Length: 418
Image 1 (cartoon, rainbow, N blue to C red):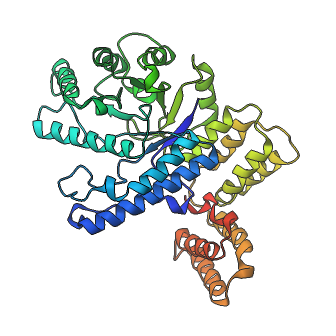
Image 2: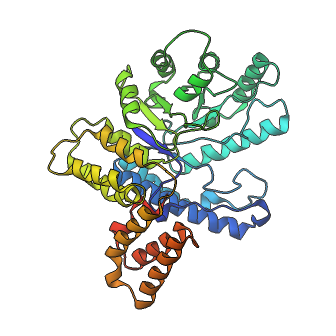
């Protein structure tokens, strides 16, 4: 089993993606952005390898406007060496990658122009994975699309347009139940007609259940059966609903105990699980640790090193609880560890807690800072305490000092990313 995440890495400054608007999409600008994004993708791959994460969804936006008429240069050829290097890293590490076109890639649209654009977008995604020399187990996930007042006709349109796609694209596609139009039962029927493997999404199923009374675990078994050996291990999407969020909104983080309960109920624990969650890699590592019963306390101490100042900036009492938990204990209840971190959450800003955390971070940096930087820190601290600036301004100064000193312990702290 692999547990993975989608598109972005939190806590690594080398993995940010760049974007541009169509009005700024000149060829030279597109080249620069594409190169920067591919370099960021390589950093994401390096991060996953280092963390032992073996499932990752690549953002569709690496090559901007790749399926748009504005794209004139041959990005596959121009960046061939970079693709080759990234692809070799992916293959060597056994990292399974995928892609997921956005909501505007609608293959069953009754408007020919929309369906044609969808086919072009799928061509881009397939070409991208081909450029990485990714095997057939690296998939493109797609929703069926709209209903257009007649679900049967719309489903038939999807099948018809799928059959028009070139075989290399067909072999990469998997289809997924959604939270509004096509339930797991609807998508499974299309899968059985087309032979397309199916991804089961647990939150979509909760919001848009099928007509029968099968449990989510029974549905996972049915969907897993649609995967052939050449497609790789069956895969599911797992997410939790955001408290107080809009319909279908993903939670900010995965509740570890709830995930462990789900994991323990899985009929087949070799399937791959793609997490769909706001804090991305943080939840992936959390869930990997939570289902590892013999996790050494040292690994949680490494996790704590990145979380501690974020937690301290929100709750000194929770910070102290976690510190006490980790002292002199060979085995820790991992779910309880993460639950305490989650409890710090995102409360109403506590100025005293923020000031205390900033001073603790500053303690690692002040000895190597210039007098001008010291004066600026104290000025910002005073301004924040008086309420004339936001905490982000002070964090920005602290991060700049840490980066200049190459203080990786501080630079890698999640304190700067929330």
